[in-house]
Length: 141
Image (cartoon, rainbow, N blue to C red; front, side):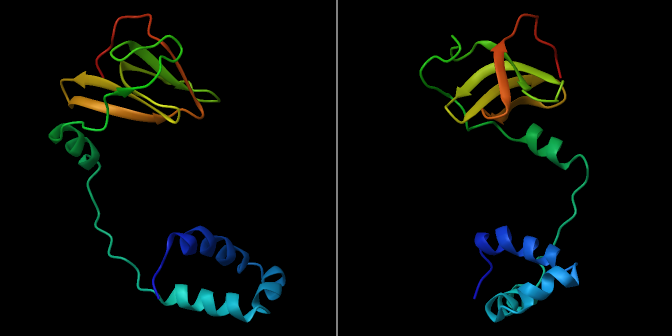
């Protein structure tokens, strides 16, 4: 009766297959999948409100960071308030520095301050990112 996360996770895959009639013919033989696809396709499209390109920066500037302040057991010898650098562990070359304000088994967050945005906290997943102590003086973003 309602659109769920399971529908979102599955529909696009089956809909993608529908572009290939030869492959989709096998899917169409399953009445339950065919009925499900028709129900999902019948849901009204949500209203989309377009925002300006500056909108995310305005939100960051006009709000105060709140989801930080927890650094569990020291990891990599790092402690709350240490200056660190976060970077992708694969092809990314950008290194983002800031003050360590959150460190959990699944997440890391750093605080930065700039004249353009004020104080912001940037969150990263631990998976796929490297964390190391910062060695250079902080740069304003």
